[in-house]
Image 1: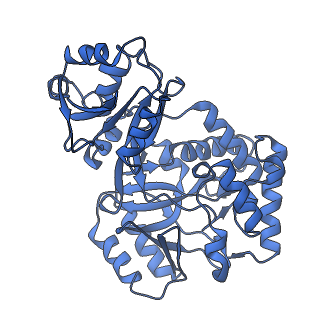
Image 2 (image 1 turned 60 degrees about the horizontal axis):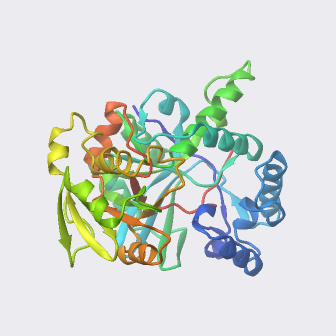
Image 3 (image 1 turned 60 degrees about the vertical axis):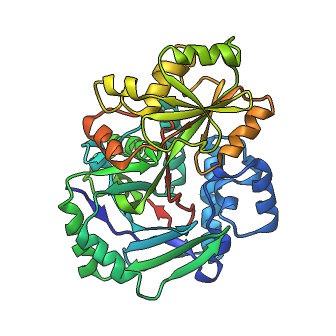
Amino acid sequence: MSIINPFSALRPATEKVAEIATHSVERYTKEEIKQILAANPVSFLHVINPAEMATQHTPERYHAIKNKLQEFVSRNIFIRETNPCIYVYRQIKNGRHHTGFIGLASVDDYKNNVIKIHEQTLAQREEKLKEYLDVCEFNAEPVCLTYPHNKELNAILNAKTKEAATYDYMVDGVSHTLWIIDKQDEIQHIQNLFKNIPAIYIADGHHRAASSARLAEARKAINPNHSGNEAYNFFTAAIFADDELTIFSYNRMVQNLNGHTPDSFLNELKKKFKITPIDTAKEPLNKNSLSVYLAKKWYSIDLGGIIHAAKDTVNSLDVSVLSDYILSPILDIKDLRNDKRISFIPAIKSPEELEKAVDSGKIAAAFCLYPVSFEELIEVANSGKEMPPKSTWIEPKLESGLLIYTF
């Protein structure tokens, strides 16, 4: 049984929404942030990245963020929804439509494995985000959840998107549209439908969900009257059916070949895999294969023999075979989270970008992977296991500051 609740969002004034909502801070370079802050006085970046404390992670910075949001509210840059609502959000990017609900998900569902994970998290990052939430007391960017396609929920989305929208704007070639559901009977119907869904899955935002759970535990510990209904027991979630999301692979780049020349590295690969030079299709065309670029040439690596010998879903993933049979034993890259010799680039970037990095001499080799499927993601989550880090890049990427949940 999945709990999805309405909430009274802080949201941008309608006439300024395109100027206010932003991408996540991590998606900007320092120079881009500087330019936006200088050019746009109402950008939400002024709230979440106060210029005078941009590189600090301290309680003082968090208080500055909280105070800046309060200032934006006092200036009517943000307005408060009168009644609790569930929202319908649609993003269109490069012709891909993504439509889903935005509401509150339950920390208890997360802790009880109703909301299932597929990716490991870092305790240090969880704690840092928990400290941020504890001081700032708001969610500005929802966790992205997914559920198996549901005809009744889909019918609600289709009907709502035929109505007049509250927001409808475009930034950087991406279309964002938002509708509000504020009638109690409609909200209750949506909640009842989600209660009949036994599990939902984190598509993106594992650290945000985990930090919310940490915050709830900390506040519960100091609240003798804890009931489970307090605002800290929930976090914002954008909930999409599995056919409304797009999974891209997360490609890998390595700085050196661990003492190998390109030829000796290829010879090591040939001991376990069939290697074929390729001239045209640089990205893998199917599962159980990957491609590698080094010394100005592309090669296809057939993983079939290893895949078929794997004993479970995680071990049989292409990304796992790359780690277990190439990165770790040949290149001595065993810790994907902390080894500085490896970097990750989502497959929304073209293979030509990988070529440029290798041809520049800064990168020794780049690996392209076939994307993980939703069936594999859900099977991994249901098994209680996790994929290697940076296994998926899932879209849509949600905007920050579009709907803010304060607690």
